[in-house]
Image (cartoon, rainbow, N blue to C red; front, side, top):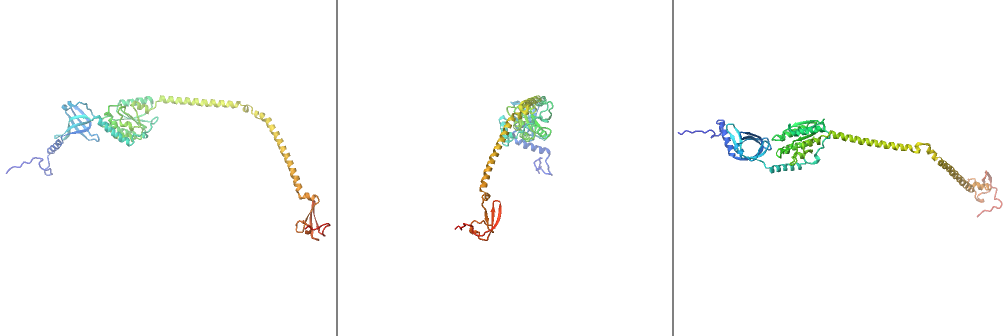
Length: 417
């Protein structure tokens, strides 16, 4: 009979027949090696040189995933560019699994910086997206306070930008107060660190304005301030924010969403903090203008008062009576004359009307010897036929009334027919 030899790993892995660790490691190594070489893009999170070799980590641009790598001295010697931590690169890598240590790493065969054109294209796409969302709209920008109670400053520790802002601000207003939050301003953690600092200062009720300052730098180092998360955090701030990155040629996106863009950290200090000497001079100028204006008004009113007091009516109040006395006498005499004339004319008119009234009055007729005869029924007797013999009559004379009786027709009386 032949002898059957079992090679570890040839049979399926079961609880009864598990694979040894070395077998699993070997299989992983085989799987990894089948991947071959690949082009990979990322950020140099670590770059440590030892004996001509480089050991480091390559970080994903969108997450915290990292992979270790080795760059041997022979390959390093063929590189034509200089590299440092924080650089955005692409690399031709061969993945390797170290069986003994159980670690996965990459051996870099080629390494180059990502082309500037590609970076600019990505940056431009993000710029257009944020602009379409309205984050660059001037209407969103908040005015800076005239004199902030406390200024929040986000900058690198012991950086020239920090010194410039503090020194120039204190020269302009010695009592100015700062709350400084140190953050990394370049490298793989810079965007997250600056974002956290902005949010921390925005939540501080004592901070009235925030300055994000850095003393310039090359294009790739300033990409931190175009990070989408950082830019959106700045746009969401309720506290006015000033961007003082100090880079003119390629403005980071933070400049676009900030409420104010300062060309340098020094400019930021001058824009945020008023100059005490200038403000005192303005106050003194305003006081001088007010003093001149008030003095002029008082002088003008004094002159007006003196002019009024010099007028005859105020200098000699009796002058008004004296000046108008003769005129008043004439008007009184004229009034009396007119009144007498009106009364006289009215009296004449009254006499005329009285004469006319008397001429037409029945009493006047009676006074001339006439009488009014009324029958027993009170009716006026107008014809002789109306007075039958024996009928009573009431005669109205000029000075009274008498009663009589009709005896018969009077002499010469003839009825009228």
